Image (cartoon, rainbow, N blue to C red; front, top):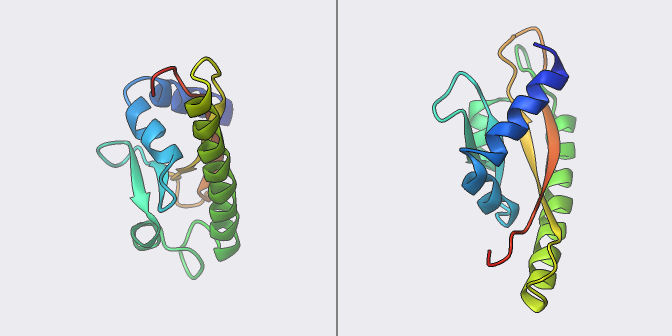
Length: 128
């Protein structure tokens, strides 16, 4: 399956059965969404310390580096700030539907390939 196909599958999951997990994670500064097809549920919000225990970075056999983690955390911080600002705007004017964002770590099922991550956006629906 190509990366583009995998990204489309991820978006379908986040817009479908994992919409609530996605939406709750926009305003949670302490966890990262993880898509790991070897786990149930396949998408879940994972705290930073648990993330490091589950997916060690750096060292022998790891599938990502400490610099990757730093980039993910910076992306998460930026997406979190955008989401908080979007909720403030939406609270002031419920007719406006600004975008929120979060980061998803995509755990590789191939030990020879590294984990990757994407930043995703979603619109605030009226009344949320």
